[in-house]
Image 1: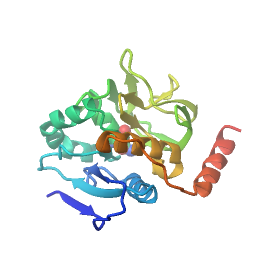
Image 2 (image 1 turned 180 degrees about the vertical axis):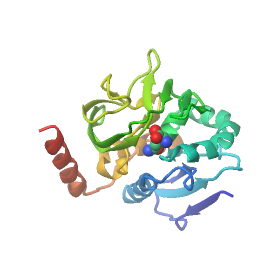
Image 3 (image 1 turned 45 degrees about the horizontal axis):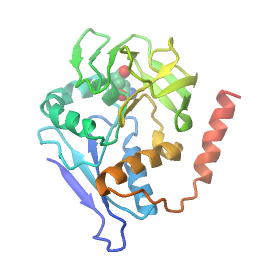
Image 4 (image 1 turned 60 degrees about the vertical axis):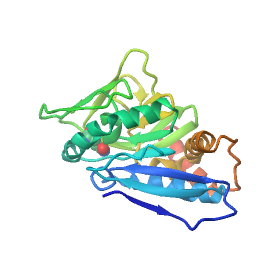
Length: 252
Ligand code: GLN
């Protein structure tokens, strides 16, 4: 079953933007559903009308998605969504190739890569939108993170067994200033291909990093509506203070 929820047809809205959250039941055990709620709120504050669609296994993925979000989960949750992800891979690849912005966190980041091999040796194939490959480890990488990214310093929290390696030419999402990132050795975190972003950062990451949230919204609005994204007035002082505090605490 898929479910959609829209605000009332607001005649004053600048336009309707469809956010699709993929596997919110199986892959959001680290609170990444907060990213979807953050984008819906920020869209409203900017004067747009969000439509939230939840994609559950067993359904065709909506081809009219304007923004796609996926979160983290246990190895078992990743295994439960494998078949549906494979069934919908072509639609997701087509949306990605057409420039639809996507943010995949941790377990869904791993499955948007080539494969995730669990610590027990089970190989979970990915849909290869990102050229990354992940190997599970007995020791988890857990803790607060600060990254240097194209959106400024980005903060969050990581909790993963997977050690991710970037393929040749694959761009990272950011450089680690504090924390482990993709694998704790090469200083990279996440991956970006086109408008598809993969990252290990929970938090949820978007409320803590408004510039990243608005960058995704801008990409979605301009692709969906074919017109420039017009910012509304949002007071991000609390988020900015919290992010600055984490940066000073971890990086100095
Ligand atoms: N199960 C995967 C791992 O342990 C993903 C974890 C997550 O989504 N936080 O690496």
